[in-house]
Image (cartoon, rainbow, N blue to C red; front, side, top):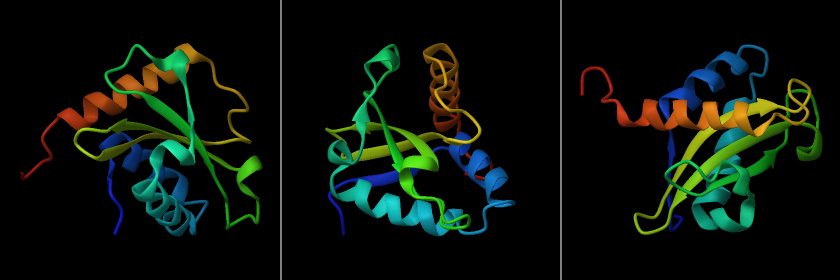
Length: 126
């Protein structure tokens, strides 16, 4: 069991569910990544200082696309935040490299803010 708890924000889950229609192995790929993030989130990705306007430090990592046999360098990009004192990692946004080669900071900042807002809302029935 890792030192950190990995939390998928509702915005992240919506994106993952949408992508999973064409990428049936996405859940397994993300579960593999979550296991590594739970152990050492700062070592798994690169800090993205351009997104410093949000509440927590944002990191970006890569993940393979096993459905299409694409290695991490050409597949998924996952953005996450680390809350060190609480030992939590928040999965915020993902996209496939073939969809967005290098998304701009303004676009990503909007996505991060939306993910943080979705995490702050109580889940229905809770």
